[in-house]
Image 1 (spheres, helix red, strand yellow):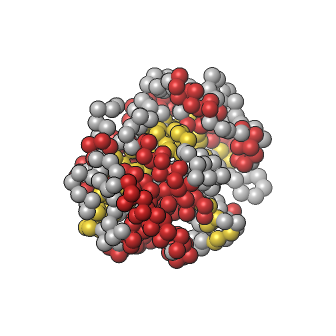
Image 2 (spheres, protein in one colour):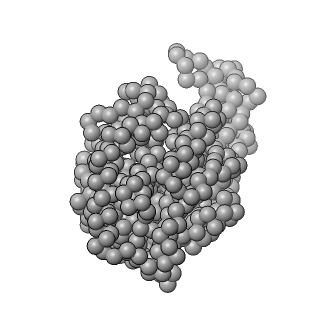
Image 3 (cartoon, rainbow, N blue to C red):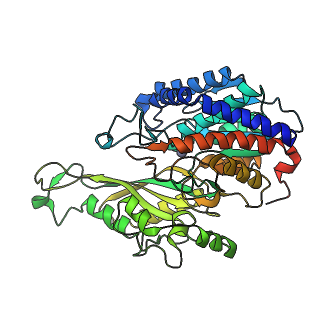
Length: 479
Ligand SMILES: [Zn+2]
């Protein structure tokens, strides 16, 4: 534990270091963003590995102990630790992911996705917001402390993953096999966004889970002429869209029986907190480029539906002829990728099977329907009275000059639920991407403001948590 006066002076020196090295850090960020760490693309496997090694080299340069690249069943995991703050000080596990989404569709990018450009106070590149930019901010906050104070106010462990965008398959086994590398009093995950693009930070306390399937409908052995066979051979594309259309009602509510059984209703306090969040629906729709928000589930506000209610989406659909002109065929097959976002206390493994069985039961005898589970992840929630929430809140206010708002995120970060289930570790989600920063889409960006204020917030966060005794932070008695 450090005294308040020492901490204030040391924090000021560390934030000054960030300001003085701003240009150098931005150039280094570009180097990190140029690496094509696309986890879904097997042709990028070497680039994914190079990115992991780049992080190991950075940790080594920062004098972090045991920087290690671990082999997994898929892409490498990187860990390292700095335990110099002593046995009484809290230990924080920092999680981010270094893999990125595929950049497609490439022709919608103004500049190539792996050639970062700095414009309008933003850094444009795949991964700038999700999540390499945020991982980089953590490295620089550590650097600021190490190069000024020569130490950190807390013990830190790092857990950097390369499979988040493809479902985090290796992490559960890794957590089970290496609990000693991940042991901590609290986890800080930076893989989310600020509340708005005007510098209002946010602390995320809930995440949606996910379940993901591929549906394949197989008809005739090969494409057949619709004039010759139409009326006798069932059309796999017709069957597929009929099945998929039956999965939601007009309000977007999922129709699979049992799907909502474990959905935890929002408490009246949470609903009040949601209602109090500043939110301009028209501006949101305008920014998104849609004429209006969908009707959605009755009895739930748009914000609630965006993060605290489950959803269903067709993520992609293909089959038949889509080239120029007309080609009168009945396609041999049609496929779709579909997914649901899940909320506490839905169990993704149960949902995976529920939906698989339901879709298979809808198959007419005239075609073959197969449903493959692609990946899944559990939803998670951290109580708002967790002892780490108040210091995190002060740190964000110090970094951004505005108090954070509390929100549940609509996205999924499988590691959060896995750390809770396997190590009893609660997570504070402190995210710095911009909410309209096009993550998973063309022209992804993060603002320089979020980069700078976010790094400063992390410097403050370690100071804030460093003033606590580790027993204070754990919050074991809480649930
Ligand atoms: Zn992410």
